[in-house]
Image (tube, rainbow over all chains, first blue to last red; front, top):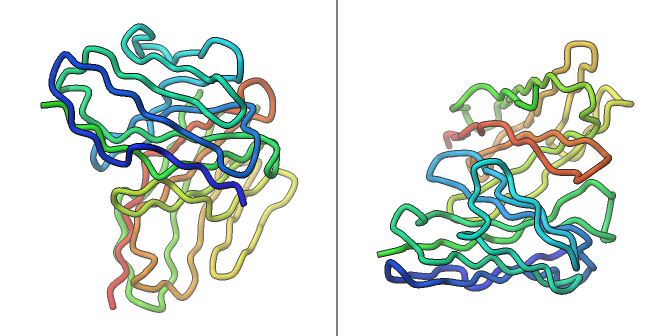
Length: 117
Length: 113
């Protein structure tokens, strides 16, 4: 149980285009989802926290108009990178917290590798 | 005060040896401390977690030792195996508000066959 999926696993897009990444909790309801960004050989950097049906809370320094987050249901959150630039290339990971286990446990997705050319 | 300091940055251990990774925090409001294992190109996977009401928790070859007064906690991997070679992250969170994690900087473990 407590499986989180991400789609796509890898995506290549051209500069200036937008790309959407989906995060789904497959077997539990996710009351909160988190989006992280990870650079090579670095730790996970929290970008934003989203609760179902409400606006996401962005961490300091993260552009909310560039990284659009939608948490439309208890099993789906999406991250849209708008007007992508090569510096947006990174490994994006989502996690979900919900009723699958301990209240403070997060279950992580497998990540999405974004390359902007 | 929101930082979690993790050491060492990298670690090389012989097969069968004990791997020890340490973390320290400052925020006394933290009360949940998970450890995650991450392989290259994959998402982090929960290994083991502890709360401050116990000083040690063991699951298989993995043990967390927790020192509340020193605000430190560590991961011990007993009988380390080459398959344990990965990056390990400690994290800390409070059980109120957003429950967001503060991650350590990571430790790259290599277990030699």
